[in-house]
Picture (cartoon, protein in one colour):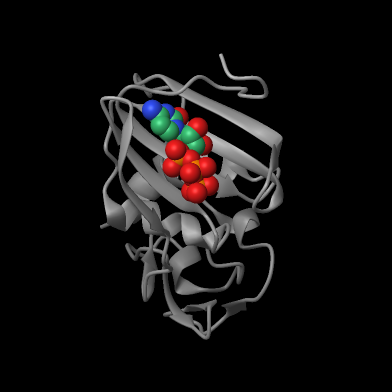
Amino acid sequence: MDKGLLIQKIKDGTVIDHIPPGKALFVLKILGIDENTREIVSFAMNVPSSKIGIKDIVKVENRVIGEEELNKIALIGRDVTINIVQNYDVVKKFKVKLPSEVIGVVKCPNPSCISNTSEPVSYRFVVVDGRLKCHYCGKIISKDVEKWIVKEDVKREKIK
Ligand code: CTP
């Protein structure tokens, strides 16, 4: 193993790199990686990076995650880089890009919002100037978006 390489290179799968330090667990949550996941998943937190000082990194083996799903990671950090690995080579590399709408992933912080009632509506935000604005009540999440990311079971329930 290379000196300083904390997690082994993977043969096939998706590497999520340049995650802001300490935020890897939120990335797992966005991707729905939980106790039901069967793929090999490795991650490291607070590792040195020549590009951003300190970073987190997540590697999911044998799974090519869709670009739409990966772009939701931009909620956590705009410099996150995705590497698709095939037979040990990086065959595709791109930076995540915040989508224009975020559905089912983030809960509205407004307890009176219709999306927090028993009405059958998904959590739904539009992205305005890089910030999330609730489609229903207009509440804007200006910081700590990760606090409002919902768990996989809630997500499934909420995407109707
Ligand atoms: N990686 C991996 N398994 C592979 C190939 C790459 O886990 N078979 C990981 C590397 O450890 C690295 C990331 O994927 O964290 C990107 O790899 P690469 O493009 O080779 O590295 P850099 O050139 O340093 O990438 P960047 O310029 O995006 O920092």
